[in-house]
Length: 109
Image (cartoon, rainbow, N blue to C red; front, side, top):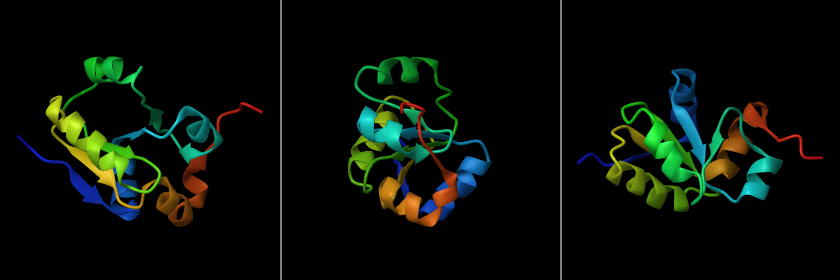
């Protein structure tokens, strides 16, 4: 079985530009306030549908707050059959300071 890989924001950005799927596992309110542009929000309610409909061979970058929870989620996704999984080191906080123009917010105001 393959393992997930921990990557810095620069490598995640390169993967994103090549079409990798970015999934954010932070809580819904925090995700709505600010997230990586084009990322999908995953939680316990949406993950089974995501797994069922996903391309298991497509690159997948998992994002959390600081890069800790994303490692557990990445390991879980590998166990579910995903073959090319990455955990973003430093999480969204490091991403936001590295690529501030590559973030978005939901229009929930």
